Image (cartoon, rainbow, N blue to C red; front, side):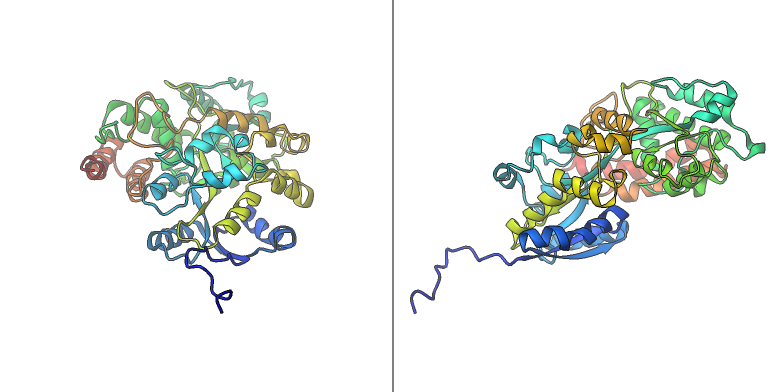
Length: 431
């Protein structure tokens, strides 16, 4: 009888099963298809996936992790949530797993990505599935036809001049495509990078809102004028997907957006394959201005299967998994943008040769600690790293989208937005 009773101090034996909540984008769904045959077959760990659209997955992760119910062992979190979730004690630090897992090679994760997934205590709280920055894409053939030359490192002033010259509305081709659709993850993302490089910021180090400062106002007026004068038709309805369609269908000479957009443009089925050039995100007062974003794997602190959860996270973020995708689905489909070694692989360089170097450079130069000319109260390039920014960014972009269509002035929109922003800042001043 005594041998049948374990000590109360013993840790429970982990079950060979974990539950994973993830965003339902194509690369994640490919991972789901590959897991059983490759990961489960090798480790014996069954993975039960729940895949939801982005907005729904964010809500579900927030609910489950805040309650620490343990419903999910692992979930996709972005660099927007990671530091906040770590501060709240919702994520399990991963340093001990990383130390024991020599094959994972944490040093191979690109430094900006590592920094964006670390807590204020310096510990690692998530591992990336893929990463992206932003750059400017342009039609080389159109530029050749018009005798235009794209600078190797353009300023926004130069881009505005080129957009004016390339704009041919009678032929159905706009000078540039920029997101004008409201949303903190839509128009607010590229706009904020323009604000950064023009010398502006949403908040200064003391959490004072700065939306009506000259630098923020000048950058916003520039963005609104550029998309209104030389942008796509109905810009207030165009987000990432809309601009991708516009560029892919040959309806715009330039597009400033996520590096992830290059893959679809260079796909074999794309009408503009091999016609696109790629240069860094335009600058004004900063050395670089590309954003930084990653979907990553975070482990719920309440998970009762931490070792099995780490095995899955390690595999899903590994060199081994990237090699598997390259072999099974083609190297152009690899979830890249997170590992230094990926950009050195001959197979990847061949498949993504048109944009891989520009993508690597954009991610490497992104600095979430200091994206502008002044110190900030929290990490983030195209966003302010606090939960309230989702609502704030949505509201401000709605006001600015109205300015794009001429319903109000930019200055009037920013005056309304300043009060909303300061109310957010005041919450953090008191902490």
